[in-house]
Each structure stands twice: as structure tokens, then as C-alpha cells.
Amino acid sequence: INAPGIWAAARALRQVGEVVVVAPDRQQSGVGASLTLHSPVKAGEWTVSPEFQNQEDGLHPVSAFTVEGTPGDSCILALETLVKDVDLVVSGVNAGSNVGWDVMVSGTVGGAVQSFVRGINTIAISVAAVTNTKYDIAEKILKPLAEKFKDYDGETLFLNVNIPKIEMHQVAGVKVTKLGRRSWGENVRAENVGPEKRYWISRNRSITDTPAADSDIAAIKNNCISITPMHIGLGNDAAMPDVESLLGEIPQQMLDRPD
Image (cartoon, rainbow, N blue to C red; front, top):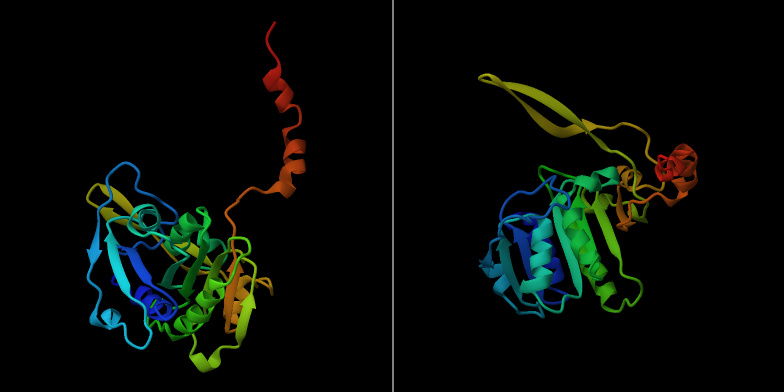
């Protein structure tokens, strides 16, 4: 709830409509789409700063709730209990890119899934900078993008937006992209604590493979804002014939009964 990127998004979006911020009370990087299902989730109102209380110059109101849970928990509570009549959900702005297969572990994207499956247009947005992060480009694109959704009546959209780590004048364009492959790998560090050995997993090893030209990873490397249309399905329909061939006689064997 204290992340500056969240309030950068609120700053842009309140120029378009009423904003309700519902966010975890602590860092949730890497939690993906996880939910809290076996213990209660606490939530309470959060007092917004004076900047967001000002409603002059056509600015819309901003209110906020903090949640002791994951981004997915926050989105579910927002849509099922805390907020009514939601037209658009924005998850972010996250400090750190969410491109390629990294979206599988992203809390920013994982939280956004919950609104998309409920039929609400959704934007997950990130800046490719973990330190010294600037949100001016994200703010600049969020406002007109949200305005476009006001008149949009097509199929429900889930957009994953990534901003390169550059200055405003360096933006080379806006690209509609495909999801790339792997951009970061894991490192494991062992630590001896008494008789135990513990392991620290970090995602700080850059994958240097050349990305596909139409991918989100390539767009970011070329100083372009990447907008990737997302969907939920992980099924690989094209591989069904290969799996049928792989199984061979196994399906029949499972139906055979001993005499």
C-alpha cells in the first residue's frame, strides 16, 4: 500500500474516474496468483495523503483499503466486498518488469487475473526498474488507456503493460507484443545455520538469449512500451496429437480388466 507505483497509478487514473486503491500491506513480489484460503484475511480503510483528498480541477475522489494478504486476495476482496460497480482494474505500477515467462510468478499479474476471470477489463503495469524507479511514463500512458476503456465494448481484455527503464524523451514507441520466453533465471545460495542448511533463491540471473522480435522482451530492450494481450489458458491444444501418439496403448491398457 505504500509502494509509490500504486499511487502513481492512482494519480493518473483519478483524472479519468473515481479510484479505490485496495492493496497488500507489505511486499508481495513473487507470490504469483496465490490466495489465502485457510486463514482469515484482514482488511481496513487506509487514510490517503492530502494530495489525493483534493478534488479540484476535475479530479475524482480516491479512497483506499489495506489488506493483510496477497495481490490476489486484495483483488477478490475489492471486487466481492469492498468496492461496487468496477469498470476497470489496474494492478501496479510495479517496480520491476513482468515480461515473458516471468508473469507466472508475478504478484502484479497474479492479482490482475482475479478481475479478468470476473469479466472486468484489466491492466497489469510495470516499470523495468527495481531501483531509482520513475513512474512518469507509466502515468502518461495510463490516463489515455483508461479513457479508451470508457467507450470500449468488445471482448474483455487483460493487458500486460511494461515500461522500459528510460527517460520520457527516449521512448521509441508503443508496441503491441507477444509474451516472450524466459528473461530471468534463478540462483541458489546455501547458508549453514547450526546443524541446518538453508537455501536462498533469488531471480537475478539475466537470460541473454535473443528474444523474438515481436516479443515484450524485445520491445523493452528497444526502448518501446510493450502492451501484451493476455489470456488465462495454459493448455497446449496444438500438442494434443503428439500426446495421443506418446500414450500409445496406455489408454486401452487402463480399460483392460483381468479375467
